[in-house]
Length: 116
Image 1 (tube, rainbow, N blue to C red):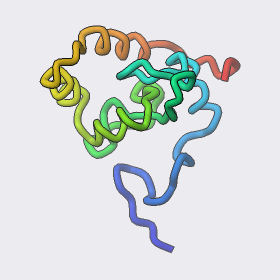
Image 2 (image 1 turned 60 degrees about the vertical axis):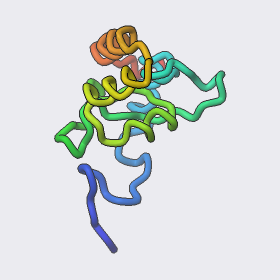
Image 3 (image 1 turned 30 degrees about the vertical axis):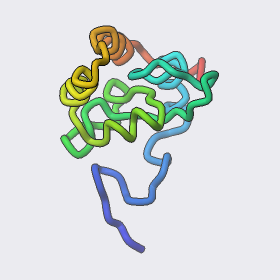
C-alpha cells in the first residue's frame, strides 16, 4: 500500500482526516456557509473545509485553522496563504475587508459539538 503524504495527509484519504462530528461542528459554527463568498447549501454549493494556514505551509488540522469553504473557493485558493488569497481577490476587485473580519470572528468561536 502506498503511504505517500501531501500536506500532512495521506494521498487518497478523502474526508477521513477529520472526525465527522468535528467537521459538522465547524460547518455549524460557520453558519453552513462559505467563509469566503458566503454562499451556502441553500445556494446549491457543496461545502468543504479549508485550512486558513495550508498544511503545505505548516498549518494544522485544529478547528481554529479550519473554516467552511465552498468547493469553488477552496479550489481557487489552493495552497495560497490567507494573506496572498485576499490579495488575489482584491486584485480582482472584490472587497475583502468584511471577509477578513468574518474569518477572524469564525475562527475564534468555540465549537458546539452538540449542535452538530
